[in-house]
Length: 221
Image (cartoon, rainbow, N blue to C red; front, side):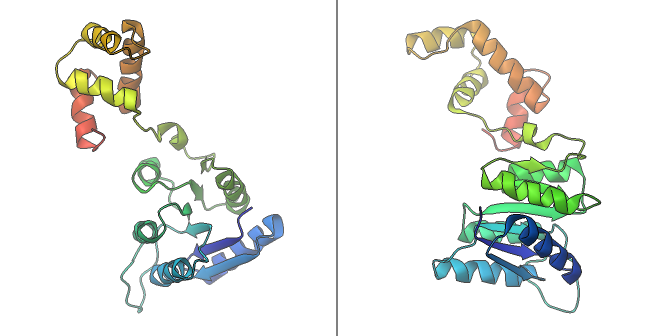
């Protein structure tokens, strides 16, 4: 299990509840808290410099503005800053926000490892999320309507090869012949057709031109 966790949460009572829940269930030796993103970032940076890095960051999404001047004003900004220091840091977002599009964007754009919605079962779900992330699995609160983990989709080398050929105007049959000539498998036309159909479904594309355009806009290709 993780040995060192940092919690960034702007309400002290919430922080305390999170710490108590984690300690009682998981017995993690070091759990530290910060009320501000800037201070959390400074802790992460110092720990990294001292070669005593954190294993996991748990952060809220929104932080209430007050009299304290801030450079990092949100959990998303903290995540970006944390990744610049420690790219492989495990990150769980723990927030009231339950908008599927927002959550999906955090997985796709910020590479978070889990998302827990605060609520009646929030602390139990957070403990479950920590366990899942420790085992290199993603976690999303069950009541979120969009299955985010199914939509965290990465194009593999074979996908990119097919997409490049489609963008160059090749038909599926021509792509199949090209793969056979290069001794690349799988190379059947039916395999390519299934691959393209899956990409259509994954990215909500109506045809090949629409698929290519969407992937270009999203920076996938």
